[in-house]
Amino acid sequence: MKIAIAMDGTRVSAHFGHCEKYAIFNANDGTISRGEDLDSPGHEPGKLPRFLAEQNVELIIAGGMGPRAIDLFCQNGIEVILGASGDVDAVAEAYIRGDLTTGESTCHHGPEDECGHDEKEGSVICITAQAPGMDAPFEERFGRAPYFIFLDLKTAGVDSVANPFADASGGVGPRAVSLVVEKGAQYLLTGQMGGNAAEALAASGVKAYSYRGGGTVTDAVKAYLAGNLPSLS
Image (tube, rainbow, N blue to C red; front, side):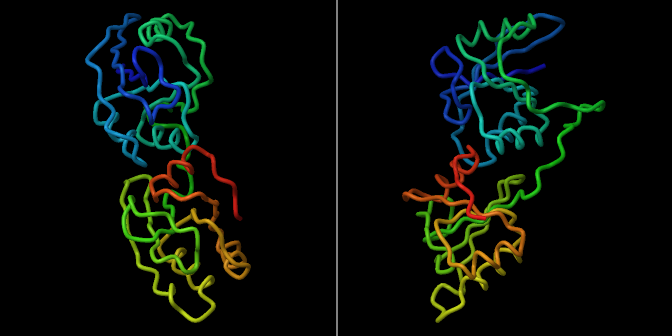
């Protein structure tokens, strides 16, 4: 089994996505050996689970991780163990001995090494933005947002769609909701919305979360993946 431990310096990182490196270990027949460390490719939505899966990692150990990131690792066949702390070599040795003190693993594999989690509904999220792309400034307005950014969390695909209702005379909220639904989003990240838009959104089944305080589309997604956004629904 190939194991990755999120690492800052020589210690387990408190958050997998912001670590400096991944310490790589190979566990086999009750023994464990350290491999070559991997530099983090950067924290972008959906990128790290695919990156570690491409390195044949089967288990990641970290101090903390948001619930949606856990789901993404699980979808990529990687088990997650959280709550670890201390020197990475000592953590790896404790894991192989079976006495590592951590939180409970949140992803369990079935009889054919497939992930036992049901895939989380709503793998596509819509983010309001001032311009195209993940690096665009976040837009707090919903109905008159210049752009809607659609991010597929499973594939990391990004689709930037200009809002055709941004300069309309009225009734933009419900029409914008229709566009979000037509594009297949199950989650919406925005700052605020009017009552008519909120009613239309509630009827559509799309779950909305509020992000405030500026930043980029990527910043909003990071906050969402960490479970830090209040619900608007």
